[in-house]
Each structure stands twice: as C-alpha cells, then as structure tokens.
Image (cartoon, rainbow, N blue to C red):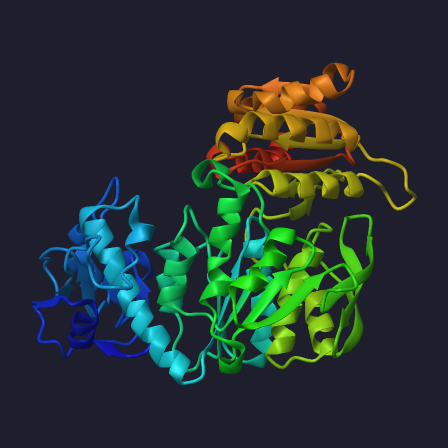
Length: 500
C-alpha cells in the first residue's frame, strides 16, 4: 500500500480520528487478521459471526499496526468510520453489502473508499488495472494473466478467488508505487455488483470469459447474468482513452457486449473471426492442451502444463491482454507454456505411488465447469496407447441454481454416462437428481451410486479403487468434497483399504 496517514484516511472515508493525532502513517499492508499484520500496517476491524475484530484492536497495534479502521471506539489509534446507508455518498458499494449490516457494512464501505483513493492515485502514476469476469474460469484466467504480466513489471493479483467486497479492496491495497499491473477477478451475486467493484478500481482492460448458469438462483436468468457480466465492458474507458474489452467471440452473449462499450474490442476464440485464436488444439494423456496461438502480430506454438481443454479459452483471454500491454507473441507463448496452477483445488492433479491419479477440482462447481471437468476426466482415462483406464467421477451438489437445479443435476448425471465414465459417485441427498439422471440415461447397474456424505464416498473409494484409476472430485464449496480428495491422497489410509 502507498503511504497514508490516519488523517488522510479519515478525510477519505469521512470518519473521525480516535486516540490519534492524524500523523500516524500506514507504511505496510492492510489486514483483517492480526496474525498477518506487519510493522506499520492498518488493521481492519470487521465483526464476524464468532468474533469481532474490534475486540482485537489493541492486540493489532501491539503486533505492529499503526492504526485501526473501525466502526466504534477501540483501545487503539483509529479512524472511526461513519455508518453507511442507501442514501450515502455516491460510489459507496452499498449494493455489495447485502449480506453485511451495521458495523460490518460501514467498515467495508470505508475500506472500499480507501482502495478507491489508492487506485486513483496509482492509476494517475501509470498503474494498469485489468479486470476479468465470467461464470467460470475467472480464477484460472486471473492466475494466467498474472504470470504473463509479471515479467513485464511488478504485478499484484488476489490469492485464490478473493474477489468480493472484502477481497477486492484488500487486493487493491496490496499495490504501491512500484506496481505496474493490478489484475483483479470480479465476482457478482446480483446486478450492480461488478459495476460497484469497477468503481473501486476502474479497469482500463476488461475480459469477459463466458456467461453460464452459475448463481442462476440469485440472478433468475442467463440474460440477467449477461447484463451483470456486461457491467465490466460498460465500465471501461473509451478506446481513445486506452480502454480495451477482451470478449469471447464463441459465446454469443459475451460477443454482444461489444455494443455496451466504446472501448477497443479484441475478440478471442476458436473461429476465424476471432482476433486472438487457437488452432490445432490437442490434448496429451493427462489432458494438457497444446495449440497454435494465432494473432494479428503473428503465430506461435503453445504447450500448457495445466489440465483441461477449457484452459485454452482462459489462455486466449490472458494472451490478448498481455499482447495489448506490449508482450510479443513468442513471449506470450513461452509464458503460457510454463504457467503453473496457482490456486488450490482447481484441476489440481496428483498421482499416488500406486498410479491412482486424483483430479481435485473441488473448490466450486457450476454446470459449465462440471461439464468441462468431466470431459477432462474422460480424456485422462486414456493411457499413452489409447487403452482406457478406469475413471471415477465423485460429484456433489452444484449450489445456487434456483428452480433449474434439478434439471441441471440430472443433465450432469446423463453426461457422465455419455462420456463413458466408469463409475459415478454422487455425494449427498441434494445431488440425488445427478444420480437419477445417470440411472435413467442407461442401464448402468452399480456404475452409479449415491452415498450420503463424504465419509461414505471415502469408504467406497477406499474399498474399490485400483492402481491406475483416475478420480475426479468436484462440487460446490458447501459440499467440502476436497476432504474426499485429501483422504484418497493419504497414502497410509489408502494402504489400509479406506477409513480407519
């Protein structure tokens, strides 16, 4: 973070100083966890379900914090922020704070205001803000963008999927006067959310990956999802002012967003009408894609270390951004070919000593990402001679799908059959329609099974896994299916034949 005094922060957020004269200077990072504070940092006192950050203000200062951002008086130098309301000053991200109330909403709004001030100062000094959104693939693409831009200058990007009303300003405040690129992942739970995030750190370049059915229960329709994702290109500056929209030409709802912006348009995709495209896509025995990157600046071969054909679209979006910022085609191809997975539980491929391969993609799930993961599993189930390996899909509930949830789960179960997945293990009663879809799609016998919980899945796999099998584990976070992946990868547990 750039250097700011508590006096400056109080002015930015419209707050008042408490036990401070205003000269106290923030010289380090902004944190809401006292364990991560460093000397000269700013502690953000957020109330939670179990603990209230205000109660740890003195401990934060003892740990080195120069001050606290708080909603009420604390035993430490602080800026006391004003309450936030719907009629509050323009730009306050009230739309983002539906799940927060009282002190939490006030502190989050103040944190956003500080981030907005920092982003504004740094952008005037030459910082390029890049935003990426989409129903799926945001985190993987953000990680690729960071790896493509880092050789070109100091780059800040959020860890994992830290992309909401807390993670977004927190990430912005990691940037300082040395930062050249700020790569931000923009998430939304409803209309207006992406526009509000863009108001905190206005992007000059924005990429939209796809419009799917994630959070359909909250949005109501794919058209509403598209309108919300389109808030990113709509927020970009005009082409004359450097604005660039990176849009997926293969997704009609995304391609139509070109009408919502006056920024320069760069299309990516697989067709000949895309500006940045992939041709001759192939997958190796572990579903790692290779392709030829074709751009207006030239062509180059790419062989990725990431797993899944869907990574090609993510790579194209990242490539278009890096090319726009001055990288050569050869540099982009080389960096894509050496890029690694940075975020946990996203197509995380691990092989046990007995040859069992576990694909841990359990961080989250929606119909589009599950379809992509199943296709990856089907590809990986072929060995180098083309002979099939036994494949397991361990799947749980896909959350927030609303009234379409039953049909969406049913379709995933049917797809597992069509892809000739050897065994489908459906975890939890909420995901039952997935099991029923698989049974109705074909005469599978015991190829599909419904287990009540994680323990049931672990027991089943412990009894029946064989050396060389390939196992995909995927569900929404609420299902916590990463515990299945962890148990499978526990060699001592596996050698004992399951749970103890």
